[in-house]
Image (cartoon, rainbow over all chains, first blue to last red; front, side, top):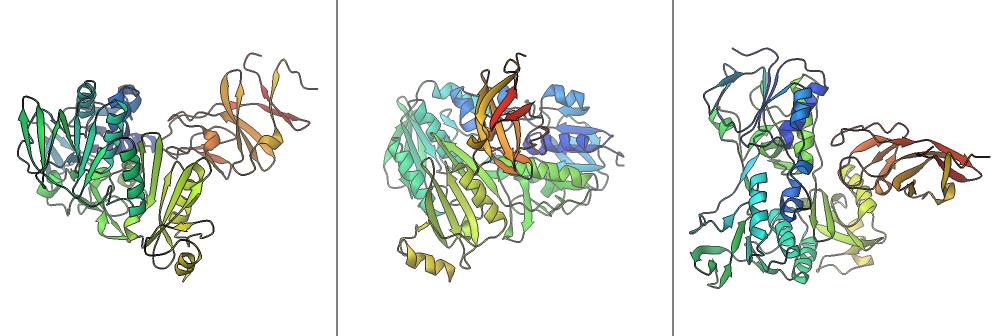
Length: 414
Length: 109
C-alpha cells in the first residue's frame, strides 16, 4: 500500500537534492525522503576534476544541500543506503539494509557509473576512475606525488583532469580511440582548438588509438596501445564515459533504453515514478533516440522540474542542452546540438575569446561554443534557443572545404 | 549638496556601459555592481553569492541580472533571487545621483 504524501527520492546527487528542496519550497507538507548510495550529503560534481584535486576547492564548497538545510526543511536524508528493488504495484522500495519505504511518488535520480572497459590489468591499484567525491579525494592524494599520468579517454573528464594534472606538474598522456577530442559534444574545429591547447601545455595526445593492456610492474604501470607502443605511468585514469544506473528501473519493468525513458514532465512509463538527471532519457524532438544529458545544468533543472511534476503541476521540461568546462585558464561553454551542425563558423570576441556557431543546412544556429567568450556566448546561446538564423557578419567559415569569407557566407544564407 | 560623510561618489552615470548596462566599482573595499536600467541607477553586491563571478559581467534583461557563470538570476532593484542555483539574495545599496555622479550610501555611516 502506498503512503499518502511520501515523496521518495532515490539518488542524492544534484538532481535528487534539487528535487527535495523544490518539493518543500513548492509547499509539499508530507514526508520527503532522500536516500543516496554515497556517504556524503548531496554535492555538485564540477569541482571533482579541478579544484577538489588541486585543493583550491573544499568539500564544503561543492555541497548542494547541506545537513542543516535538510534538517530545517524536514528532509529525511538516508546516506550510504542502496535501493535494491522497486515494487511498482504496491509502491514500495526495498533497500539494502532490509527496510522498505512506501511512496506516493518516487523519483529515480540514480545517476551513472564510470564505464569500465574490458581491459587486462584494469584492477591495478594504480588505475582510477572519477565520478564521486571519494574518487576525487583519492586522485588528490595520488597527484600530490606528481605521477606520470596516462588518461584513457579524451572527453570532458579526461581533458579537465589532464589540465589539472599539468598544473600540478605531472607529465600527462591522453589516449583517445576516436579521431578527435570530445567528438560527441563538439564541432570538429573546437576539437582541434582543444587539441592544440593541450599539446601547447605539454600533454601528449594520441588520437585514434585504443589501449590493449595494462601491466603493473616495479617501475610503474605499462600501458600498451594498439600499435604496440608502451607508455609507462604511475597513474592511469579511465575516463571513457558513464553508464546510467538504470538497473532498478529495468528490473521494475519501466521503459528503458540506455537510461530511464521520461517525457517532458519527467514521467517514466509508471505513473507514480519519475526520473531526472544523468539517468533520465528525455523524449526530445531534436534527438530521435532520446536525450540523456550528463550535465550540471540538466541535473539541476530536471530535478526541479521533476519535483514540480510530482506535485501535480504542469511541467514541460524541454531544454536546449547547456554545459561548460574549465581547462587551464579557459572557460568553454556549449549550448545546443553540435551533432546537428553541418558547418561551423567562428569569430574572435573582445578580450581574446572565440565564439563558434554550428549551423545546419537551413542556416539555423543549432549550437554555440564559446571559449572565454563571456557575454558574446550568452547572446549566441539565446539565438540557439530561439532557432535563429545564424548571423553571418563578422564570422569566418571553419570548414576546410569551404573557403573563409563571402563565398562561405553566401552558401550559408542559401 | 550631498553629504559626503554618508554618500560616497563611486562613478559617473555615463561610465555605466551602454552595452552591458553595468559597471563594477569599489565601495570601501567591497565590489559593487552599478546598473543603468533605462535611466534608473541601482546597485548590488558584485560577487554572485553562488559562485566566484562578477555580476558586472552578467546579462541585464527586464530588470534582472543573470550571472555569467551558472545562470542564477536576481531582481536588480530588490536583490531577490529568482531561480536555481542561487538560494540567497543580493545585498542592495542605496543610490543617489547628483550632477551625473553616482553616490552610494557609505557602510561606515
